[in-house]
Image 1: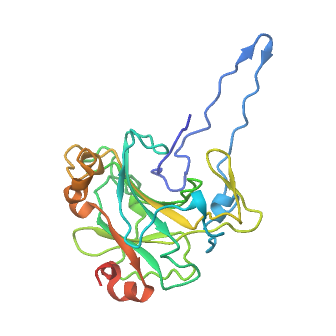
Image 2: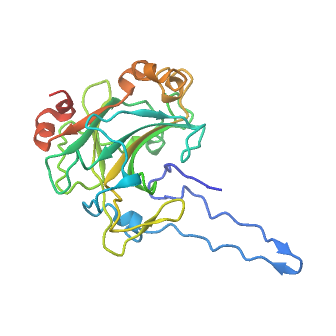
Image 3: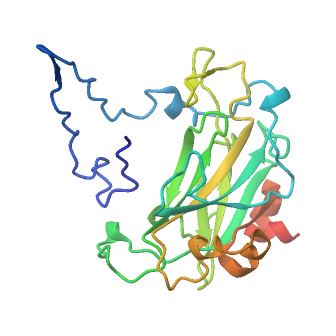
Length: 280
């Protein structure tokens, strides 16, 4: 059972006003079973998951079954929540693509992954907009995710995208942050993503089968970008929910500008052209 909070209205209250659930007392015969201890919300940098964003690391090169499919021209795929193994939430539809350090070189400022798309409108509850306001989606976000462990490195929610047209990206250490800029009235956002690392030889992360991935494994060689739309309005015809009902060959055209366009650019090209570096 997973109790999930996506993005709280109050940025100073990460738990959204909620308290830890209280488990019932269960007795077998005359013995009362012991409940598991409550897990606190941990501060940043207290776990390997948080330390993954401290710099740039690629582990060892993947081999054999560790090799995943990625291309220099990243292809986006809609993830159906009815069949997805890790994202079985009917309120969410995801679109994803796979990144590889084969195309995004570590320890270099010359390689960036850039994506652009038209952003869906959403109720900005942190700015006081009521959640029931008429918008295209209830929520959207973009995350970088390690495909081996499914650990999330960094996410940017809809209201936290950087909307500064003068903003220029410098990712000289390729930290796994997501930043965005917006130019023009069509709200096309430019997202730039880097990958993370394990902080030291003792850092270990685990996948859902409790398999350990440490410094000598290819954690962070690949990275998947997950773009989520939550509770799309029925009238939002280009939503991932509506588009997912079509054959795969028709989905991108049906989504139009809401479907991401992405690729790898040099820092110099991005500073000169912005996200239009993708067409240079």
